Length: 221
Length: 74
Image (cartoon, rainbow over all chains, first blue to last red):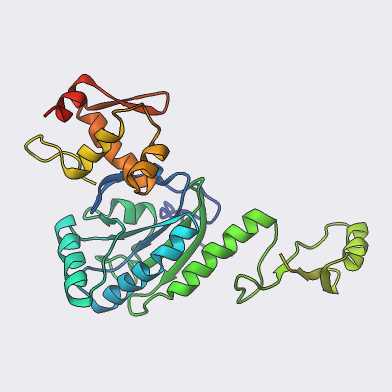
């Protein structure tokens, strides 16, 4: 009997991975027609939400609006997306301003045909076939996907974590270092482990570097 | 942001962008600084104005066309 596993070849679902070029698109938004390439030179937090006029999404939009200035200081823009019309988005944004006093100053994609949602794998059919999950794609200034975070429909996102990831990625790019668990700006960063025995010896004695062992060294920036 | 109304007239944003190009051709980054808007938003608007034939891109710098100048004439 053939005991080889039963492998079925399937068309892979479209989903960019970390390190991939961000899939390009042209789409209608609350700021008119935008292309992903319009954001080149800036970082972008591209996020989806399940639906307009829903409570968790409303708290998230307020949360995103609250971190927008901090993101701008990091040369980072925001753009939302859901499977709703531009008219629904406009009405919801106006409602948030009227009822909660918060102005939404970032574009929202009207993805009625799920074009961008499909391109980025934002619909999780096991959860819902009609709504987008709470996906977050952090795209850098060269339009490369640098981080992907998914939350389920029932769990609102942590805005401080999104800010922290952007800061960590930019810190890595600027300094050639990694960041440890729960890292926040101002804390020590991780030096990449040496790749040779000689490098390991040098690392341990290096000035300004705090080594627990040759592979585990931290430093201040 | 929308630059042209359905009747073909300019929106406030459209006029502001065209006025920003009266002095000299500029790249989107400089226009964004001039009108104090993010570059992505300006690029979208410039595309709309280009498609309407009001501006043209030459080597990354946008300048007014005769039609664009006509829209600024009182």
